[in-house]
Length: 224
Image (cartoon, rainbow, N blue to C red; front, side, top):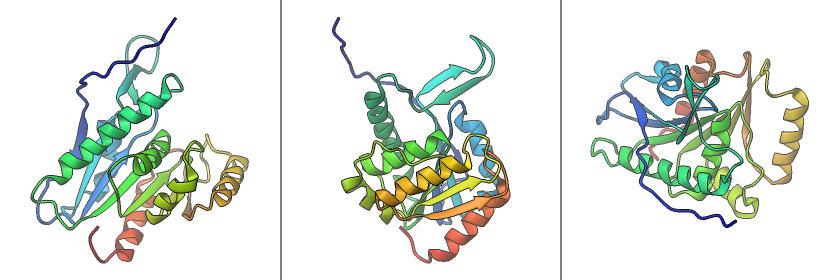
């Protein structure tokens, strides 16, 4: 038996909160976690929708029923099955979303922030190291830096993006031992990052998001 691959055209979707205009100072690309949909995920960033932020939520290319064969639907960025091709596909897809958003003539001289939540953290790390897009800063919320990156060269790319890792004290999927092991790993690969521990579980906490945004804006006085 021989495996064959063929490239096809696929229609993907993304959602935008806010309206492109010359008043936009920051563009956020936010990547959801496993089994989420971009539209619902984007509602958690409503506090950033103040006329100066444009928030863009791409959706994973794989949709699935969350229980059985009907009912609520979610999306995924990839699984372990044919993973290399799935990674290449979503990196190319995210580059195209990025390009389309920033092609708007009203969007210029902006800060670009990329946030990944849960499974989305690995997604944005691969996107930022394998793709053509860049950012002012990246945020890795409730997830890990994937250990399959080529850290000999990729760690330099990530460090330039000044990553912030956010973890909840009550995260039901990440134990204290998991965190310690991951931080040891990051030290071993020479990754620089800021760590923000917040009160809460495996979710986007509005008050933490607002604090993160305020700290980030105050540290950036210019555009990307």
